Amino acid sequence: MNREQRIPALAVSRGIGIGQIVFLRGENIRSVRFDLNSEETEAELLRFKAALDKSILRLHEIASNDDPNEPVSGIFGVHLLILESSFAEKIQTFIHEERVNAEWAIRMISDHYIKQQESVSDISFRDKYLDIKDVANHLLKELNGSHAADPTVSGSVIVARDLSPSTIIEIAKKKPVAIITELGGWTSHSSILAREFDLPMVSGVRNLEQFVSAGDCVIVDGVNGEIILNPSDKTVAEFEALGKPDKHSGIHISHNNEAAKTNDATHFLIRANIDKPESYETAKNMGAQGIGLYRSESLLRQSGPIPTEDQQFEAYCQIADAVGEHGVKIRTFDVGVERFGSDAHWVERNPSLGLRAIRLSLADPTHFRIQIRSLLRAAFGRNIDIVLPMISGVGEITRSKAIIEEERFDLIKSGIDIGKPKLGAMIETPSAVLTAFDIATQVDFLCLGTNDLVQYLLAVDRDNDAVADWYQTLHPAVIRAIASVFDAAQKADIPVSVCGEMAGSPFYVPVLLGLGAREFSMNTTSIPQVLQLLTGISLPDSIALVTNIQSLLTAEEIEGCLREYYLKNWSALFPLDFLNSRFR
Image (cartoon, rainbow, N blue to C red; front, top):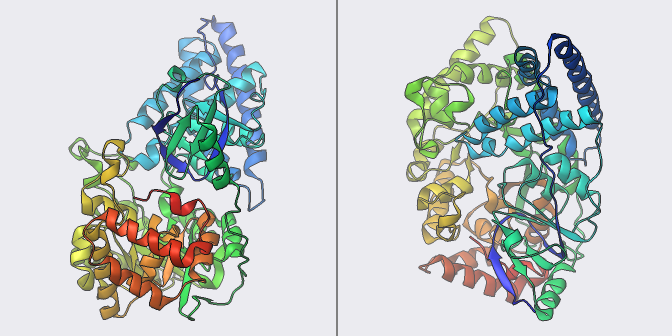
């Protein structure tokens, strides 16, 4: 019998799955080149056009899905934009000029686009190469008439090099227990879909076929980021026990419009991080009151022009109308220079520390001014706030406010109705922490972006597996930095919204509450657990907990102190597997 073996992985969708391995192959449809004469080329162009029309029709049917609980429509909307952009035109040009079959043209053009996408420095866009690959496969399937479903995977653990969004959706319907991939990060559409479907998933597992065979038993630990090969009966029993309890521990939370309170009547507010208007109804039903972070870069696509002022205006109106009185905080474009095209002297060597976010907006304010105009217009009669990303000091606030005032004056002069959105700053760099009070005196609110704050404060790339152990959310420096931001905001008498991963994790929420947080913004799937926890704890206990950890010197000590306290006092408020997890 093979010995139990544990392999580290990147957890991209939380949960535990136990089952037999099914290797999923065939994501890439093979393409062979055929040279054509003039007459055959014209026929091939018609053949491709027919396949393109069928693909667009099929995707329109999916993307028009009006079920707010269905996560696929927005993603297939991205696929439609790719198909309806220059992507298809370049395929037709390739067929015409090279006189080759459509399959070969699709492969050549899609490979070119994929190569470009994989070289993008911004990881949140780099992972979207799978969308291009998916679109190419849509076209190839239409050309050869093949829309066969993948093998039956019910109760199995799916293993693949990577998975397109289409495949995730297809196999999710067949109820696998978990997914393991070699490629794909937290921000990829496939990972997002896995989380939406509540399907445990880990990635970053290389050459798994060398260690296991189809049919072997494996445990996927999407909590700690680990897979267990050939688990012992004892290990299987342990993980089966962890996987059985209901996520919300059977505790019913009333989701209504009343203000949420801790058990000592301290008011708090839960908002959602959402990029699609139709998703807000689900978040609202779970207990969200407004959108704490709308990432406007979600409007930017892999191909095609930057949205115009009117297009952005319509998008912001839709999201604000969906939310209503509770309002939406819209972050201006938080992307690198490659998203807007660049001169040679702007080629990035270190994108995370380069020309991006507010720096890019101020260095080349063309797109920033268009976005500000659309936001000012959309704010008329609507509750919209503006958030400036990656602020490092007051100077950027001052320059941004000057641009906002200039655009406000021009719109008023032109007789265009505008609103008065509040202005906020993202606190996610060490310099912003150290000048938090100065920044707070210049804005209406602060947004604490804990993901980047930890990364920049500890000088650790959060997407680099080699230094994953150094990414420590509970590092004493992080705790002290967060505390100083809340102190600065209190002195300036402005609110702070926590919108990073810390806000969506029950393990960190009591610490945030004790440090001063009263507004938490998170992904929709995190809302029930966080709401359950906050309504079951008290502010005095959280303050006492923070006092206890402030004297500790390492992240490991702080994590141990928190776990011990939670197990002793609040264990019923956590999912039963949660406190056995590792946190960083």
